[in-house]
Length: 394
Ligand SMILES: Nc1nc2c(ncn2[C@@H]2O[C@H](COP(=O)(O)OP(=O)(O)OP(=O)(O)O)[C@@H](O)[C@H]2O)c(=O)[nH]1
Image (cartoon, rainbow, N blue to C red; front, top):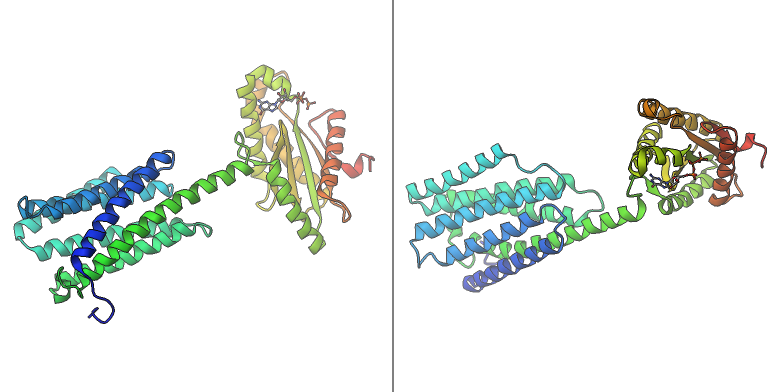
């Protein structure tokens, strides 16, 4: 059937598979040891070690009783795939496999091995093993393809690799079960040989995919660190200025308004003195979460520095911006009321300055005018919002 496509030298193929499996195990162990903070990598390494041991068992089937070697190999493969699935779940941020599911999988795997020995059927052993690999590969494919975001190409490609593998092993499982002649493992043109060749490609592809996925993950973390404030999780000033250029260009193009809110927590030094630096940090985090709750998804909010924050409101005039600022002010006040009235001689409040972008301006000019309005709000007694246009400084 496959003779017209390609023909394999089975012994050479087996040596290549053994080499690729061992190399994969070494690569995955190194990947895990060099990135211990990424979840799931230890499981991938463990799975590949089990895979290598399974091959060793198959190679030893003439040295130890065949049923024992094959049973151990089957068990190692079964456990390796469970470990692999669990590792992928952890990697994509899902909960590890629960104890009951693990128990069911392990009992089922043992059941298949016992049945293979009781029936003394190589056909049953081969087909149940293939169907097991197919099933767990399908689970891995589902985890990866459903979790991959558009830019996570390595995760998407790996997902498809597992999906193709699942399909091929399902075919193999059913072909063996129905006694098709093409599954003879020593037939260089048979399905078994084709699958062995696929396994060689898959082992290398899956390991390469893991390396690329780990690198994608690291890059994502680096991007996040470069653009976010580590304490509050809000965007940092650098990221805001990047967004601001884009938003400004968009508003210029569409003739839309854009407003800027400059916010500064009041009496923050006193808050620090009263609650300590860590207590002060908690106020900063609470301000960020209460503000983000009242902003739209298209608004850009950042920690501008210290206890100063800035929000960019595309499509919003300064008068509308004043309403948004009032919402932020009251949200923060009610968020902190319970804590501060108990132990502070004053309320935890915020002062906000608002300005609206004018066609000839750059972003620095709008921010400077919002800052002037903020200064005015502080001078007028704090816990208030001032609109630049109202304070007569233009
Ligand atoms: N806890 C904490 N404090 C910070 C952080 N960044 C800056 N601060 C503190 O914020 C305080 C700002 O104090 P000031 O600039 O005097 O302002 P203020 O006390 O809020 O007074 P007004 O703004 O005039 O109401 C300083 O004591 C800084 O040490 C931070 O990340 N965490």
